[in-house]
Amino acid sequence: MKTVLTSLVIAASFSAHAGIEDSVKALASVGREGAGNEAAGVAWREVVKAGTSALPALLKAAGKGSPVADNWIRTAGDAIIAAELAAKRKPDLAPVISFLKDTSNAGGARVLAFDLIRQADSSAADGIEPTLISDPVQALRRGAVERLIQAAKKADGDAAKAIYTKALAAVRDEDQTKTIAGALDKFGVKVDLPQHFGFVMKWHVIGPFDNTERKGFDTVFPPEKEINLDAKYDGKSGSVKWQSVVSDDAYGKIDINKPLGAKKEVTAYAVSTFEAPEARDAEIRLGCKNAWKVWVNGELLFGRDEYHRGQKMDQYIMKCWLKKGTNTILVKACQNEQTEQWTVEWEFQLRVCDSTGTAILAANR
Image (spheres, rainbow, N blue to C red):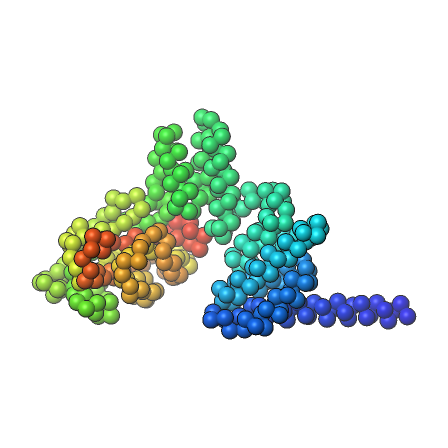
């Protein structure tokens, strides 16, 4: 009889586990336009009802579906933790902490894991966060860096300088880097921001080519066919040739208006060579408010045919492969017909880094 009861308990456990898996799968299957929302509503209630036992399955599914699906998953996790706290129970966080520590898990899912830990037990989160100082996920690293910044602000003299220096080695976000660099400057330490971020500072620029009626974005001008720095081509208003441009901006901005003049309905190209010490995966991160395209070694990575939507660092992130030795980075930037003052900028900033935002520096930098 005891054996039969044990078997029934095990069978019920497996059935419940399968039920949770199916419900989580329903949440993860919700489409971008909300397809599957009705089924997800039923599944969401089942997942929340299951309590903390559902958290491992939720975390495993996070980041693998649409943004809408991730929202369902996140709110289910939040509701589970809220219910545990409302019932004055201490949630079992061991599986969540284990998931967070495994850096092979998806970055977004690990961020969710830490958020759940922080909601459930702030003291546990306080103990974990400093260990994330070198985490491959930028969002997790940020909190650890902020702790160093706050500690440095409370320290004096060499102690503060040492803490800020440690923070600089770990920081990847622009705002925190500005804070740290500003503080170190007061200690007489000049931070090379272009090097820290990996901005490409030396370019050759050519133009202007035509962009009347915004047709330049899709028009294949000579630089897309060949890179010959000695060549001259027919531009919009006459012969054009490559000009050397070196940025003096701390964030690597290349102002195309400087060498080519402030013009409208025009297209320009900028090219740079990047000597990679080794073959590797990399990211090209671009900031640009004009229409643009980016190629690496002749391969089009991406482009956006839109204008004046604002510009910020790491606005666009493109994965690429760097071969060992010389790599060619080509940027196309188009200006449209608008003449308002806020449309005058014709510029971009580009950096090369790894997936954590850590700069990859060229041998020919």
